[in-house]
Amino acid sequence: MTIQNIIKFINTTDYFIIFILIIITYIFNFYYKHFTRLNPIPCPLPLPFIGNLHNLGYDVAIFYKQCQQKYGDISEAILDRRYIILSRPEYIEKFFDRRIFFMRPYSQGADEIGMYGHGTFFNNNYESWKHNNKFFTDTFISQRFIDNAIKSTNELYKELSNYWQSLGNQNSSNNSSNYSNDNWTLETDFSQWFNRFTNDIVSIISTGERTYSIASYYNTQSLIKSEYSGALVEDGDKFVKSIVKYLEGLVVFAFFNPFIRHYIPIIKNKSNIYLKNRDYLFEKLDKMIIKRRKEIEKISANTEMRIDMLSSLITANTNENDSNGEVLKSMPDEEIRGMLLEAFLGGTATVSCKFILLHNLLYLMLSEIDHVLPKSIDKSCVSYNDLQELRYCEAIIKEACRLVPAVPFTYRTITKEHEIAGYKWPPGTNFLLNFLAVQVHPEFWPNPEVFNPDRFYNDDQNDKRLGDKSAFMMFGGGKRICPGRMLAMVELLLLMVLVYENYNVELVNKNEPLKISSQLNTHCKELRVRISPRT
Ligand code: HEM
Image (cartoon, rainbow, N blue to C red; front, top):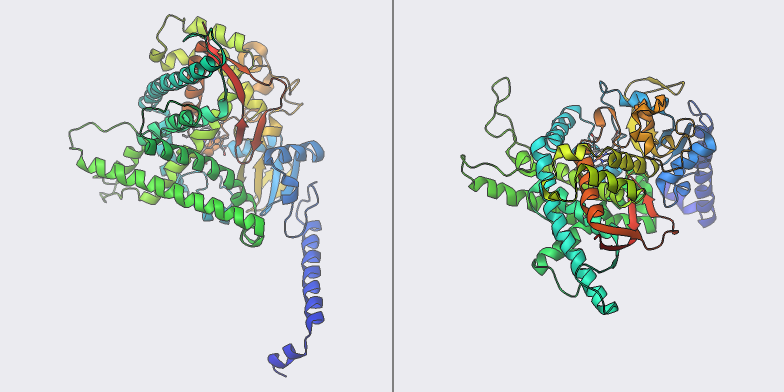
């Protein structure tokens, strides 16, 4: 009997029964594999097809923290694959060994969204990662770039301050008859300003060009418009929104398996929106590269090059030979785009999120700022050395980051057998390093939920655990430690000096919980504050 004849004999009920049998076999196989897996670790029960995706909820980091609370310092979850969740410093320590290059789990989603294999974060090719990482490190840690960042932050702050003053005056003149130029109040959303501020700064440092994104936010709030052309400002607004959207989409591409992304209607639609946003963003970054390439071609050999990462990336290796005398290839545009993308992703929401959560202990913060940088000195001359003296302010930043990490977890995959947390794991096992849970672990932090910067200030506290690098991982660790860490700290300290010295900033709604959510990084959705000049 031919297959066609067999098909003729099968009716609708038979098809239905076959379908049900396939599903039952799949479910049986799924749970068989689950209950006979190597090193079974306590975990929430996964469901066929979706694993533990239904447990993720809106906040991924909270889910991992709950795993620690419910199942202990080692637990596991099935997302696009099995992840072992490590929530104790000793378990994580191994991944911070600077001699080992740990890979990140391969992710088809990261490939689809255009990050896999480029830049550093999702790059598992050691040679290419090393090359790119050196670029980031040279850029963001060199004194020349840091000085440029300080200068640009000062200049941009002046612009921000003018916008606040203008908005404050517009609002106060409407609402009160006895206001004056230095006696105004502005109620506004801090998170919108600083997402844009840090985007503008990272753009200046990375590309030498502004995105005009703070001007764009000012225009949406003000009757008087900024001096920049409408098109530039609109472009800046679209750009910063697209960076934030790209970051938001990363979680869908990193953790949802391809079947769900491609075939489940609501998620498929969302994924398509993120892919469209990727296309816009990549086109924009490509245009920046082409423009700068053309500018560089016109610059004569004797002229000094502008200090920005894009120029360095474009001119890298040109006219140079390797140790064997071979002419080195310059970096392809696709690779440069990957590096720019990571700089924008790393520099936009992470720094701003941290900055806007620094309200606590304002009084102590201000007295240190006034002591190190007396009010009389011109803040636009603040040097890197001055900032290093702000030790209490730095402790505040660290403590805020301990409680609400800007990056609440990271991940690694192993390529050789390793013993971790008392179990032997085969190559290919994926691990989640659960920073959020470790940084409030009661065995390592006394009164973990209490905000107390003294933990990072009092050197003589003699608390051995503070010396344990894996109990506090603001910037991760090992070879893959954040290359933007120095820039991030400088920017945070400088913004603290500039904003809090000159303005009274108070929360509009002191009792309202913070509107934050964590995907791959923590994002502050809104923070309503009341700003007025400090006299
Ligand atoms: C407060 C601000 C910031 C925080 C808290 C932060 C934190 C982190 C953390 C925890 C990681 C993961 C490290 C690991 O896997 O061990 C990371 C990676 C990274 N960060 Fe940052 N970051 C910040 C700002 C920045 C800035 C300003 C940039 C660049 C402009 C940047 C660029 C990167 C890059 C490229 C990586 C990937 C490194 C790799 O995998 O080799 N970050 N960051």
